[in-house]
Image (tube, rainbow, N blue to C red; front, top):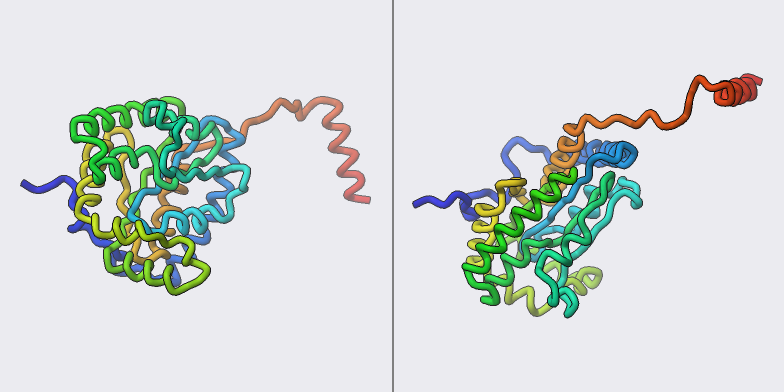
Length: 269
């Protein structure tokens, strides 16, 4: 019986026909437009975007955040990286620490790792059994449905990196002093758990795509990864058909007309 999602059968490299130079140029245009769209989204105040970045270590989550959102006003985008839960977070249900970082209307929120960690690493390490995971899948779907109801669109990106490229990036981290701080002994251990992580990701994709689908991004080439994410976010925001609000100023009032005439007079002097 074939699986609905089979990561081993999905390429980690860009499709044929993509030029690195031309694609980077398109990405730059998209990232600049993204700033304009976020400003419009904030002004209109009806929508928000949650960008979820998941992937194995060294898949490029931090790099994607830096490159794709580099032109966005810092006041318009927030980033949260989910680490090991604190004692306070462990004392609550698993979505408590996630919900408080959901984006308000007008904002872009980025999750570097996310609520999906509770059905990924917890299962690989054996902390959560299959029955509990099945319940969490349903809670995640309900949570995402709630955010959708409140005007949030969730874009869930799985950064699909090959084992060979991951090893190359680990080597780079070891050899380059400016990247060495990113490397830890646990990275090698996780690298040996690829089959388990693949299976857990595939099951998460299958059970948690009913509200917002997963987008699997070939990630061996960073320039293509950045293009796919930029294009997806921009096209999603375009689809909102947003408009700047008219505001509360009466353009025809005597006071406003007097101000306009005074400024125009100064400019023409």
